[in-house]
Amino acid sequence: MTLVERFLKYVSFDTQSSEETDVTPSTPGQMVFAQYLKEELETLGLQEVSLDDNGYLFATLPANTDAEVPVVGFIAHMDTSPDMSGKHVAPRIVNNYDGTDIVLCEKDNIILSPVQFPELLEHKGEDLIVTDGHTLLGADDKAGIAEIVSAIVYLQEHPEIKHGKIRIGFNPDEEIGLGAHKFDVEKFACDWAYTMDGGEVGELEFENFNAASAKLTFKGRNVHPGYAKNKMINSLRLANRFISFLPGHEAPEHTEGYEGFYHLIGMSGDVEQTTVSYIIRDHDRARFESRKAEMQRLTDLVNAEYGETVVTLELKDQYYNMRQQIEPVMHVIDIAFKAMEEAGVTPHVKAIRGGTDGAQLSFKGLPCPNIFAGGLNFHGRYEFVPVQSMEKAMNVIVKIAELTAARQ
Ligand SMILES: [Zn+2]
Image (cartoon, rainbow, N blue to C red):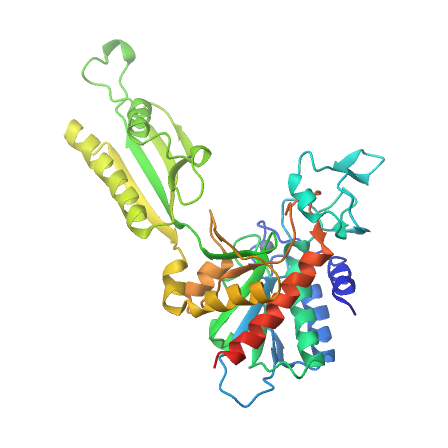
């Protein structure tokens, strides 16, 4: 099977994950796909092939050198986004894309156009795999799985390329934030790994937000408004004032790159009691801490003004920037960087404005940056992946294996 054949086979499985269940994997379709992959890996002659009850599939390509080489892992997720159906995906290949509109569905007039998606033009002359306009494609992250399996096959067919032990890991439920959750890092037993789950060619990510949630509860004192003078405390007005103390421009809609923010995500209340929820995000750990401290300072300020506790603050850290876990092992990035260059890809380091499974894995002791898988417009009907981007990702995997061994 070729890389493209493999990809087309994988997207025929409906593996949409769901936030509505509390089992792992969250949907049975993921286990069906995992079983299929398990058989494929066994047929390919991989070793230590294991599929656990939670749907985590691991396998090993043994080293073909006696040298001491670190064990490197490659990870991709089997589920697709709950945002759109991944059932009966009917992909089509647009060969030698000419830069014009692509009609996904003529009947319903669904068009993938470079007017809305100018990134299409970066892939003129390439072969694009698109949807029929009624489902997502599932390149996120089945492109990653196809690339990893194809790279393994390539290494098997080219014994002249010396490599150490390679581990592969396919996990469920990444799209609902639980991919790293039950990932057995000890059993995976790698020195480091890469998730193949980024977008455009060249993407290399090893920074994400530090994240916390903040819940503020404002306590009011309700009195008949006709008799309220010097007695009433209106919790709605307290909350409103508190919100106005925070810098309004430090919000998601006004920030980009490495700029952090306070994001007001909910408020509800009445005169008696109002609750206000924020999420706090910053790549820089010190700035992250000072954002939380500022919330506390304002809380204390308001309480001091009233001489009683009218507002309480609950802060909860959610996740941290994986950079602090990667920095002590920067060769993990150097190797990926060099592998891309040798595969003819210009590396493009980007800070994630969110979290990733790789961040969670990094804090579980497995340094795990993210590399492009090549797909674009994830999670919807306009998702597509250029065949040439998948080939590049596959070549990067092969190069990483080769460079890791050569480095020793
Ligand atoms: Zn993904």
